[in-house]
Length: 118
Image (cartoon, rainbow, N blue to C red; front, side, top):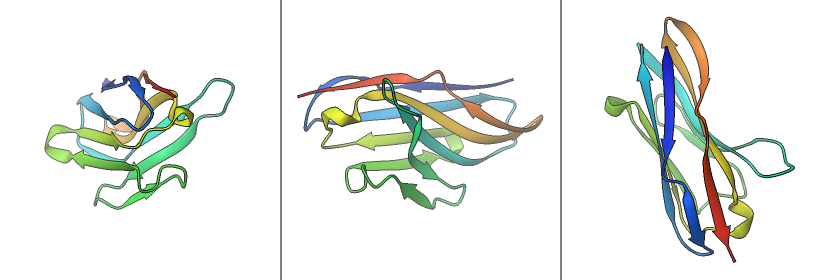
């Protein structure tokens, strides 16, 4: 069984910062790409940022220059540093990872709420 647990969400004023963390646990041989998605009320889930096993990254245009994704492979953890937050960043943020354990699994966390007040 594999589990992804996010933390670090909360309420912040516009212009502020938050750092999200996602720890992967369970039977893990290796982790492929990891990423953060978000879903705002009434909208589809969208990719925010992703990082490959070798460290390559890509970002949604809306967060480029403000958010930074990183990973610590020794800790099976992915981070999302969010700076200069805007009210439109308000959403539930979900962690995603491609995990090689007992077979391959595309796994999701339960989500963490990020609310940015104006």
